[in-house]
Length: 418
Ligand code: HEC
Ligand code: HEC
Image (cartoon, rainbow, N blue to C red; front, top):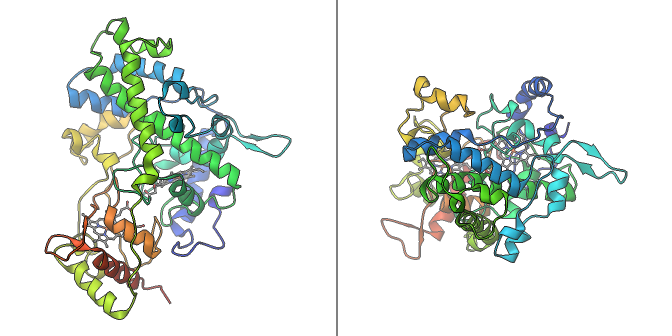
């Protein structure tokens, strides 16, 4: 199976897939046998965890809103066997063509090849065991992984070239598919054809847009449309989305939500972090980088430990976990308090650890440009914050030259480097 393939020729800055993936292999096989993953699921499972979170946040019932959101979603986005792209509900032309329906149809549905040896059911074949049918990151093989597979539905990605709050570009998603995330369960799909990869990228974007639309629509239903225990009147009912009643207020609200999300995807390339020309990577730069790394402005040492040795004890969680725990005053380690969310499909809260920087394994790429962007943007969804870059040195902000020094220092920490 392709998911265990190890790229023979990793790109510069990418370590080959390491032990973590190989150790996972038996676990995955068992999980796949248990679930019979080739049988396609007919409906996308609703995001019940998020529905509970919204209910707790707004102190309001969300069952009915969730039920109608699910119906509306199926009308607009179809099913895992027959996905749809609701282009006619979007106002921007570039959003309409953000993904190609033909690609979605190839990535979705059951696994088979046609006479021309074109592959179908790509997501089912390669991704679903980890990322789940709706891209919730909680597929059957997710349980024993650390970090967990990405939940695409909040629309937040870690390994990208854009500003922290922006969506990744298509190229970012292609890069992660080609190289995987070394040191995690996310394998490399280098062996797949360019066409297959493009179809998968479209499908990830589709699942992400769909999942984020589901999340935001639910909140709008309660806050804007007046959903509580009973359904609001016709004009504000989400059922108008399923009947495509163009004049209804609910339709207007939903189209707005969809425009905002798809707009962010279309505009992602405009949020690319500019990388100034690299300064010389010499001993002097590394020595300065050492100073900044351990100094008060960058304070990398505060999480990564002295010389990036990872000896600091931190107790923190990623944003995907915080959403159903700290975000609504639930202690992640309180099993009883977490139980309802676990029952609704949430994975057991797992701590996130700052990386040990001496082993040279970079999940999101270790080439200088990528590291420059990583330091400036931080890592979205994790405790590693971004940093603004100033023109002049000060006691508050780093300059781009100083960021380059840190990049050189971090790269010099790799003990395995020849
Ligand atoms: C063996 C499990 C596994 C399989 C199979 C798998 N993934 Fe992943 N994937 C992961 C894990 C784990 C992460 C999280 C990595 C991290 O947080 O650093 C991830 C992360 C991602 C990300 C997010 C990267 C980011 O920037 O945040 C994307 C996109 C993705 N996977 C797409 C796919 C696609 C598409 C497939 C199928 C072609 C696939 N994955 C197959 C485990 C898997
Ligand atoms: C608040 C804590 C915190 C601070 C401060 C911090 N980091 Fe991180 N860093 C993390 C965490 C957590 C991760 C792991 C994220 C993950 O893999 O999901 C990480 C990961 C990394 C990675 C690995 C990226 C990859 O592709 O795998 C690098 C490199 C890094 N940090 C460098 C730095 C540098 C340089 C600084 C200072 C400018 C810094 N960090 C400051 C918490 C922090």
